[in-house]
Length: 150
Image 1 (cartoon, rainbow, N blue to C red):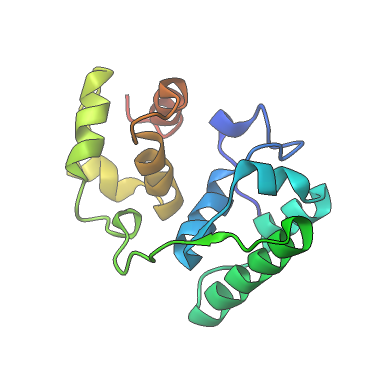
Image 2: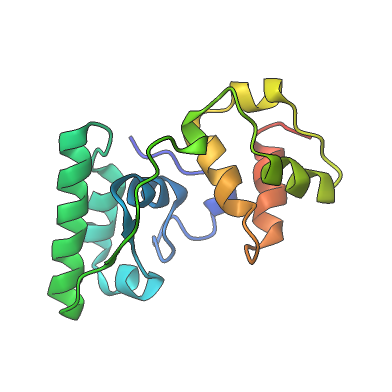
């Protein structure tokens, strides 16, 4: 099942941008996928990347190999491999990342450990990604509102 966030609504129909659920899978399997590589794929291929599972070790390996094949087919060059975080922050419901709390405070929101624990791993992933420097602040605010954290 595809879980898209409301803050992604302006591009999920066309999949012109990489949705958070795919970005989470990319981080899980250690692949950096450029937006230009994503956009060279057909909509059907992009949709398959949304739907393919990436949870078990076998699925994670298979997902990474599949993406590499797609990128090489389109560009002739494999996607960059990234280190895989052994204990990603989005899977740790007990520890609210300090930099995320700081980002929330910049927009006047105080996140608590209780808030963090109620979020799904994908919601936590989205907040972590959207809190990185250089990210569009508007989507961070939208995600905070969408996740009922105001």
